Image 1 (cartoon, helix red, strand yellow):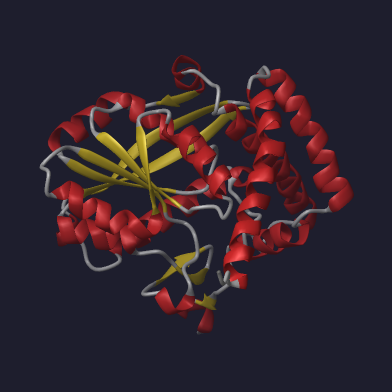
Image 2: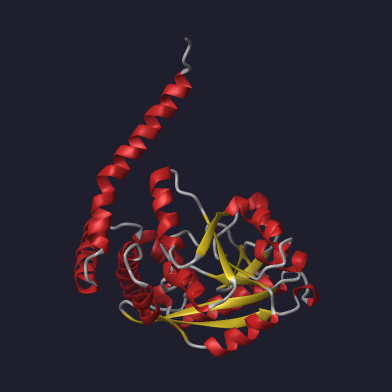
Length: 311
């Protein structure tokens, strides 16, 4: 029987993924059951290695900060960079902790500041789109579904290792949220819309789209960058209300989040108006506490001067 080389390579790749998962998974489980004070000691140790020894993405972070805050002195930017890496590793530990954390504990550590306003808004709308970003602890945003009656869906990007992907899905789904791969979200939303049930959809929309999929450029820290417009497109297509999630870090391991209305009637908003408003609110929030935004990505990979700067 003829067996193709590609088939054998696929089998080998799958075996390597399984071996990697079997080796790493016990450590993930062990770390997840440790108390927070031990997790943060581990975070401090990883910080020393990542920041001082390896210098992981320090240049990327500094380049982002210089573009976003051109008037800040070098010393202040370095301070923000250092604080960001401490936060970055705390989030990594908190993400692992999610696997074992109880509902009561996460509700104590990730508080919603305006539950009455949110309930009133959600009572008025059967379907709602939530726009958020990689700020604060975005992993714990999934716990918001414990506070609402709508069934929650969240878009996510699959990881290549199917075993780790399944682990991530289980961890993020424990708070009654259904995770849907980004490429399948439109299909899922259309399917849900036909049921007449009440749904809420969470999306992290501060990523940079591929240039051939960039339908709109928005002002972000004084320059124009391509932005994801899919949430607004869906809001207009189905006439779903849109809200903005703003998360604030209170102290290590504790966060507060509030929900703000972006649009109750998206079809009445000029094209890209909802997206631009989201970017404006995000920029204002980052400006107040810049250390807790994920600067390790190339936030300005594609950019152009806005009209004011060109003149």
